[in-house]
Each structure stands twice: as structure tokens, then as C-alpha cells.
Amino acid sequence: MQSDDDTETAFAGLEHTRATLSGVVAIPVTPFAEDGSVDWDRHAALLQRLVSAGVGAVTPNGNTGEFYTLTPAEARRAAENTVKEVGERATVIVGVGLDTAGAVAAAAHARDCGANLVMVHQPVHPYISGEGWTEYHRTVADAVPELGVVLYVRDARITGEQIAQLGELCPNVVGVKYSVADPVRFASVAQDAGRERFVWLAGLAELSAPGYFALGATGFTSGLANVAPEIALEMYRLLAAGDYHGALEIWDLIRPFEQLRAADSSADNVSVVKEALAQLGLSRRDVRPPSRTLPTAVRGHIESILADWGARWQL
Image 1: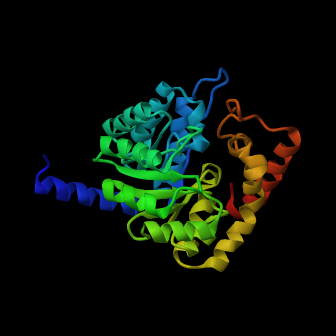
Image 2 (image 1 turned 45 degrees about the vertical axis):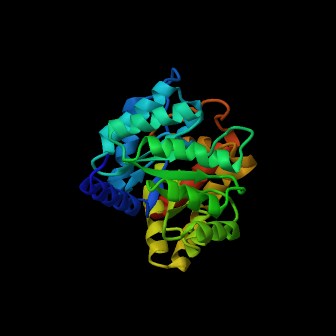
């Protein structure tokens, strides 16, 4: 049984963890070598580039990291490598998911290797009940009471009442990455769950951030930060200051890039980021199926976008 001192220490740690979620939460890519394996040296370099630019939180094994294509061993090493390279300078939020036992094991590994939080991917089971959704997340959260837990909500059926109930059951559930493309739905869910109880992240990246910040979000996730962390950080600075006019100038600048990522139900979401990194000489463009490398016309579009950004941001 925890002592009162242990309980107070854990609570203080969770409060600090909550604070680190208010900002840009970058979702790093997982770079591949020519033979298809993970290029761990390049992985380290990209992480260091993000944090050196000022990014304060990173999520290895997120969707931009091609979580669903990684083997369990690769996912564990991604968590370990992230903690090793930037864990003393940034908050590390490890993505976990898939089957319940695997998610629990991944969360325990994240704790043991020194991560600060876990983000639980939206369950991919074809048949999800409300009670089952709660039990799945409760099982993961209860396995790592020392860590903060971020919910990744992509299903519009998940209600604020469900999130509130989970928060009552699991004090370490501290954040919600909300990725339903409906600002009104977001506002309703946040109000019903408790705007102050959780840290709310705009989970659809920069294009959704201004609207979601106006309705209670205090952070956003970013794949674009892999390419141009300065742009993502500037958008956050403006939003945190309430300068929506300035934030919309950034929004206009990045819209063509983010629309390429969102096209065809986000089919090329990661491919666009990796193509940009390849053009900047920072990584190979390789992705794993079911993603694809991009056709020549799209590569040319990205080249023109980067030239436009470079004129302003010296990429």
C-alpha cells in the first residue's frame, strides 16, 4: 500500500506531467535504411533535431512513426532510443496499443525504460462497446499508475461521460488527444468530461489547432514538426498568446502541405513528411506498406512548398 507521502509524490508528478502536454507534441518519424530495417542512428539524429529546436514533448510509436508497421521489438527499441537521446530534455510519451496484453506489456516497458507517459492508440477492434472501451483503457492505466496516460480518441461515439468515468477510475489518465474532425463535438465532449480535469490536445495537427484552442485545447500534436519544428512552435506560441490572426498566417502557409497529408483519407500522411525530410537531406523517403512512396508530381509539389517555407524560415 502506498504511504501518504508516496501518494503526494505521485500526484505532484502527474501534475507536472499534465503541464508538459500543453505545447507542441511532436510525433517523430521512424526512418528506415535501404534494407528496410530501422536506421537507429538517423532516428537519434531526428529526435535531437526536434528537441534542439525547442520541442518539449515527443511521442515515439505514434501514427507518424508508422506504429502499426513496427515489430514489437522495433517499438520497444524506439521507446528506448527516444528516452536515451532526449529523455533528459523532453517529455517522452510512448504510443501503445493493439491487443490488451500487448498494450499492457508495452506500457510497462515504457515505464521501465524511463518514459513519462503513454498514449493509448484508439482500439482497432471492429467491434467496440462503450464499456469495453473503458475497460481496455482502465486495464492499461492501472498497469502503470506511476505514468501519465493520454487517450487517443478518433471515434466520435466516445462521449465526455465515458472519459469522465475513466478519469474517476484512473487518476493517472491526464490527457486526451482528440482527433475527431468536429469542433462542436470536441467542445461538447471536453465540457462533459471536464475541461480542467484533462489536458486537451488538438489531435488533427496544425490545421485543427486554432479552432480547437478556441474551445479549450492547450496543445496540439504535430507531424510537420519533423520537417519544420520552428513553424509548429511559432503556431503554438501565437495560439497560446491568443493571437489568432498571427496563427492563421501560419495556417495559410502550411495548409498546402497538410492537405497533401490529409488527402484520400490520409493515405500519404507519413509519405509526405518523409518525402520532405528526404528533400532536406535528413532521412530516406522509404515507408512501409500499406503506405507508399510518392509519385513524381507530388514530390514536385512538396519541393515547391519547401522552397516557399525556406524563403521565410531558412529551412
